[in-house]
Image (cartoon, rainbow, N blue to C red; front, side, top):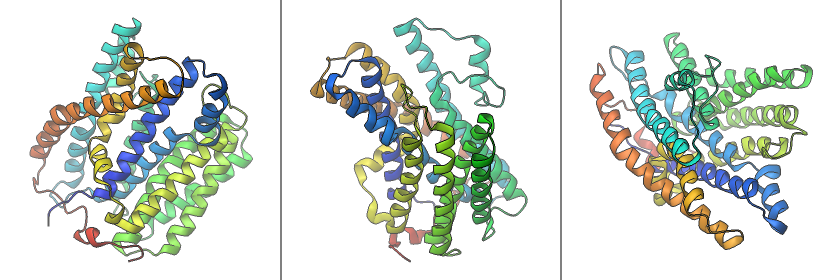
Length: 369
């Protein structure tokens, strides 16, 4: 039984990464250019009410929870093969992004970075080494690596695919997070619990998959876990970001709303399956990892060389050009970096057969099967 990509999952990836790109492009407009009468409208739309960047990132987390726990192959060395697969999936494109970023910042802004910081970032473990990210958007990769580590631990303990493991993790994390947010007056503790919130989104993605595909859970599990997750997100974000609405676009409404909306959108897509697929956006989803890594630097080049001025039409042209260039550069990255290295990593696995990570019934899956 061979692995088959799911168009609706790639569509979600495409929506996620385009949300991130558009958010960042609109932030450039609001932060770096006078917008006159439009200032409040733009700033409120992308900062106060909804942070589309965080919405996209959390959608990615849900997709990871839907896919990654089922990516351990039925081989003689599943953990080793899983680790090899993940390494060649993440690192080559990430290193290419670092190279592009260093060249871009040196060429356009004459910025350089200390060699120790670059070296730490090459490991993707800079957060654990207490070294700053070269660029802030790399923070999501730390969460991804944490999720991989937790999945490996649960898999080795024989718990990863137990029926109620993901449910228990979501419930326990939500209750702990709500308690910390309400009772602990410590910003560092809130930051730690935000990492827990991101991980709980991933395990909620697994709960949803176990319901709509695996059939081992029921919709009442999804509803209960989602309600607790949403309460966790709203409570924590109110403490973490409440009253910090300024040029950084982070505010409790915008961040909490992003977490809740990402959950609802993901559930909608998962419930209706392939009927929610949209092929053009699914194509962007296929190359979404490269889009996420390369788009910030494509945006710097567009902003530097192709800024057309202020006003709705020039802003629309800027956002459109950023999206188009990001997709083009990312298609090159996917074709010449991601795909070859993924294929190379597959050859190193003990079992070169592709795991049946996605059941064939997915293509027929309907709303409440």
